[in-house]
Amino acid sequence: MKIAVLSGASSGIGLCIANFLLMSNYKLYTLSRSRPPIDSTPNMIHIPCDLTIPDDQDRAVSTILDAESHIDLLINCAGEGQFGPHETIDANNIRHMLRLNLEAPVVMTGQFLRAIRAAKGHIINISSISATGPAPHGCAYAAGKSGLSHFTNSLFEETRRQGIAVSLIQPDLTQTRFYDDIFFEPENIECAYIEPEQVAEAVKYVIESRSNMCVTEINLRPQFNRIHRKSSKTE
Image (cartoon, rainbow, N blue to C red; front, side, top):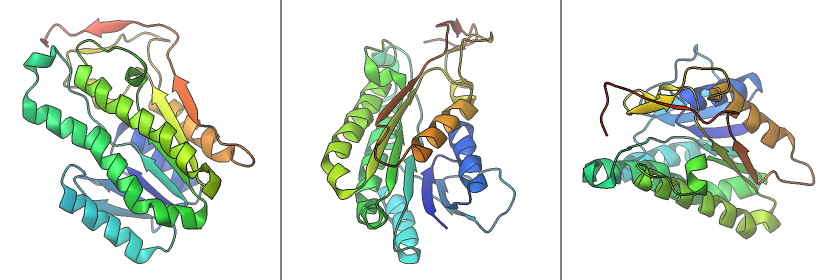
C-alpha cells in the first residue's frame, strides 16, 4: 500500500483529493486542525495540526516519520486568502496567511524529502492562478502563492535526477467555502468557476501519468471570467 500525506483535507479541494486517494487504496495521513468529514477507515490517519505553529508541524511530521520509512506522495493543499487594499489587511492576518500558504509547505517538504526520495515519490503543490500575474486587492496572497509556485518549479529541477516527481497545480476560481468570508466570489453561473472535484481529477491525472515523464504544471481556468461582488462585504 502506498503512503500519502495531505494537508488541508478538511474541506474543499483537499477533501476531494482525500476521497480520491482513499478510493485509490492509499494509506493516507491528513494534517489539518479539524478531522475531514470522511467515514472512519483504517486507511486514513488524521493528525490534528495547525501548520502555522512550527511545533505543531514538527510534531506531526515526526509522528509520520516514526511510523513510515518512506512517503510515496506529499500533497500540500492547505491555504487561505486575505483580500482587499493591502493597507487595510491586518498585519497578523498577513503573517498567518503567508505561514500557511508558503512557509508551511516549503518547510514540510524539506522535512519529508528523504522519505520521499526513498520511494522515488511525488510532491504535488496546490498553488493558485494568482501566482501567474498581478493580483490587485490580493497582493500578499499572490506573493505567497507565487513563492510556492517558484519553489515547486525549482524543486523539480533540484530533485529530478533523484527520481522524485514534483508537480504544480494552479486552480483559478473554484466553488468552495474559500469565498465565505471574502467580499467577492465567482458568479453563480455555468462556466464561471471550476469544481473542487475537477482539481482532484487533475491530481489523479498527474499521479497516473508517471512513467518516463513528469507533468510539472497544470493551470485550471473556468471558461468565463465573471466575479460577483457581495453587497454585504466591503474591501
